[in-house]
Amino acid sequence: MRDYAMPMPLGWFQVAWSDDLPAGTAKPLQYFGRHMVAWRDDAGEAHVWDAFCPHLGAHLGIRSVVRGNTLTCALHRWVFDADGSCADVPYSDRVNQQANVRTYPVVERNGLVMVWSPPTDAPPAWDVPSLSEFGADTEFSEVFRRHYRLGCHWQEVAETQVDAAHIQAHLIEYQIALNGGRPLDRAMPPQVDSYDLDGPVARIRITQGFPTPQGDVSGRIDTDVHGPGFAATWFTGLVDTLLIGCAVPVDAGSCEVRYSFVVRKQGDAASTSSLGEAFINEIHERTAEDVEIWENKAYLARPALIAGDGPIMKYRRWCEQFYAEGVDRSRLVWAPPLDEPSPEPIVQLATSAAG
Image 1 (cartoon, rainbow, N blue to C red):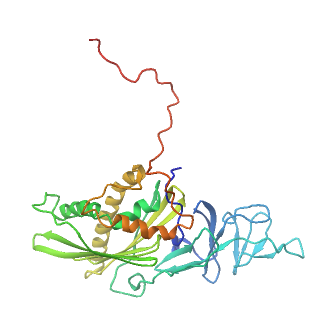
Image 2 (image 1 turned 45 degrees about the vertical axis):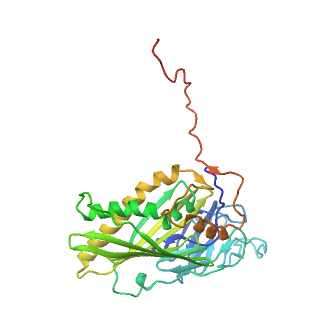
Image 3 (image 1 turned 90 degrees about the vertical axis):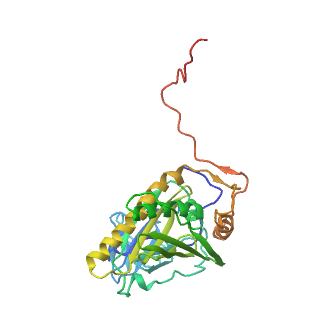
């Protein structure tokens, strides 16, 4: 497992899409370095708990039974209510008052199951916004999705939001694609207009132009970040698109990222769907290219930055509020682990000709 200067953060994190969890079902999860269980009661409310039954350790996400607003362990049929307290033991007229399961705050917004996970039992310190484009607003398409598992810390991915040089490289690739794969006469780099911080919320405003056969089109990339686990990005100018990007730590050295997109409707449903698929495929291709880079890059505590890189260090300082354990400043370079030694002995690495 990779180690980083940053521990796992606190905040709201997506652990599922809402329709991944039908009513009356339970499923195992692995996030925050823990085994967990997500289940939805018969009334439709989602719950996320630590996984193991306090009786004898059975996994509550494996073959457990949902009845009403209770979850029944598959091993000995102990019943737990929605608060994680033992409500019934079928072979006893008493319950163990100490047999409680740790529960986590859950909200469902925008079709996402979001869990508050701090290192302590502190209550949520901010809320998750509700975006009408992912609900009642009929001007937008169905939701398009992508899901990735990455062998790196979430912050390596999230820094892309303010990495202007990296954004420029991807946008040039996108502009070439719009130009039919032909080289551009000129590229139009992004301009970071503002980067404003308000407690757990960061707002990044970027102007981006696009050269087209009909002339230059002015566009924007505007992102509102709510803690480490939720970012809403508007892409406007060519096709109005709203992307929710959600990162969630799996353990100290890996994470998952989920993308949910909607696009503004473009006449008939087929045209809208085609535009949505084209845009999400472009984002997917750029993300797939980045995964190998993120997983193999070193985290440099003092990067050699220059003008045009974007507010990376300001972003890192903002991130520090989400690390209850603090950031480890004992090293300047946090590199990936070396490859495992070959099981076969290496007899000769190189040869040289005699002089």
